[in-house]
Figure 1 (tube, rainbow, N blue to C red):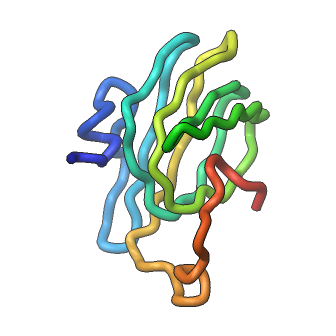
Figure 2: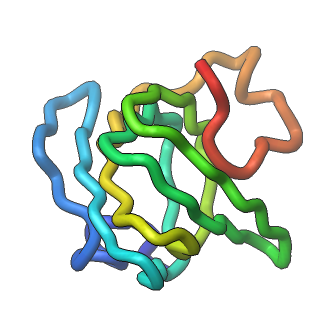
Length: 117
């Protein structure tokens, strides 16, 4: 199964920069838009607009309400998402290509959604 968001959700994601260490994605959607399941590696997400989303994976969902201009850590995860607010979602993801240190990789349960830095 293909889980690269640029492939599975081409209408929302585009690559704006890539080298051997990082890939930078731009994400843009409108209220009511939904993504299909996809995977993100460890990433930093920067919100260009305030938005509300529902992220879902494995029968579990979480609603997030993020302000404009905030950086968040996004641990590696697979999810689908829905814009449940009244505004467009516009974000930048800086995806890390390097593997997580063994200390972090041993964590058994990664949280769903973005975390404050």
